[in-house]
Length: 301
Image (cartoon, rainbow, N blue to C red; front, side, top):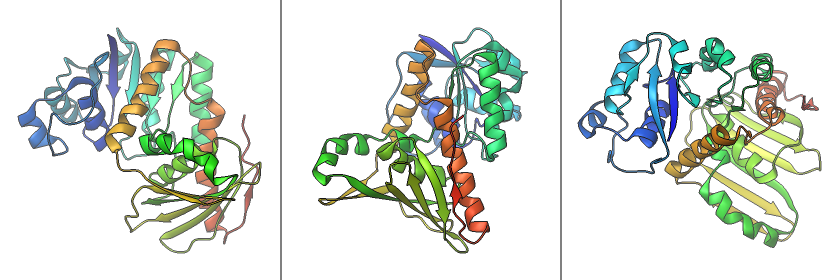
């Protein structure tokens, strides 16, 4: 049984959802403090438990611990690096939740820093540098990179011939939530983004990502809309629409990749791949601010 700590973001959506996946929950407390719905619904991990939790808001940590049966609420985040196999840092809506890793890098423990890794290129590169300095296996990704629907559709990709363009949409701000739209494109094409251009206006982003082999990804970002999770592939021989609806699966699969990393110390994504995603999103915002100017050559370190 793997033993995990959760640090920060405890009463935000992902923190609650992830904790229930690992530990289950007390139904009455879930109805009061959780995310609604059937408290027994969804997938569970039988091979890992969250055994420690810390949050700068101790009351939040105590509420999550009671709701999701976490035995220890820590007074200091450094305690979360003792007697565990890995550490989860849920998204806390600050876009800099990586800061909670600072007193824990020296443990060398595998870390899952929830999306987004950081809000700027410089911050993301600094996080990766810290992980490399301390030999930490690091993972950060959107759950939309690990969907059931795209995986099940993959055998049909060959029917399209060469895929020329993939199109996805996302709600909310481009880095914080737009990462999900890019994640779907990235799960189809993989790494190798060469340039980005954002010709959107106002609350709408219209981003073109060019891969090094010439394939294109198009992302619609609607800060005030709810476009749902969908990716459309356009190939030489046809079109394929994929709607992503099973959020429980992609949250489970995201965390399953983390657990595999805890066991093997092999990262699901290379550091350069995680940085590529952040660079693409940051440069897409910059392109829009500069009137749609193409931002070229998103490098890998």
